[in-house]
Image (cartoon, rainbow over all chains, first blue to last red):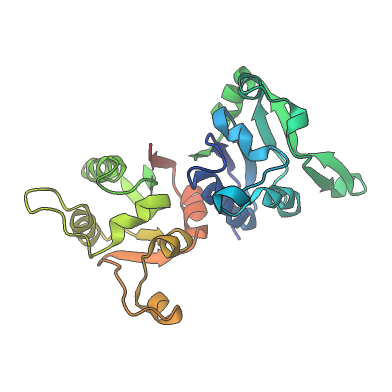
Length: 136
Length: 130
């Protein structure tokens, strides 16, 4: 669609429910995938809750959109960076997150993990390396 | 420099649409280009022509419409966000079987692809949010 390839980072900082930012961020990511850009997602602060497994929203009458994150690999969105300190500060670990994978066509379609846990310093470096940062 | 402007909070409750307006004016005055202004989340509410703030207050929709006319700005309202929040242009109102539309002059409704494209085409994407 475009010959220019820029580094896009979607920064997710808010809990999945309570506000619409997480859902509308995911909608941008899914649409944006059609543009063949170099896409990364960052999850920090309460944004780490977006990736937790076992979400159940029945009691609040809001759609549970967390299964959609599992589709990201099919959209070639394969780099989901989760900040280690944000997890720890909320009593969470990688085991509390959904297992998200992508299939590497250059490696006989081997399933590889999409979630990469990085620390705050690495997150800063990741952000500094981007062309476009969209924060939600 | 070519700027893309993203407004992601609603008018009056948040200052985002004001700050974006001031920034856009200043950028144009300094000789920069504005690739597009994209309204997302509650920011889409800037584009309703049915808002009637008190007369001694600023009218953000009218200011944006006037600026767009003067500088031929491309003001784009995200369709998905707009539909959730009750903003429809004539075509969408017809398609959805609604009896009214409310998009102000100078604004148009389009998809999220316009946001990504703005990021690609601009030298800098500026977000005005919380």
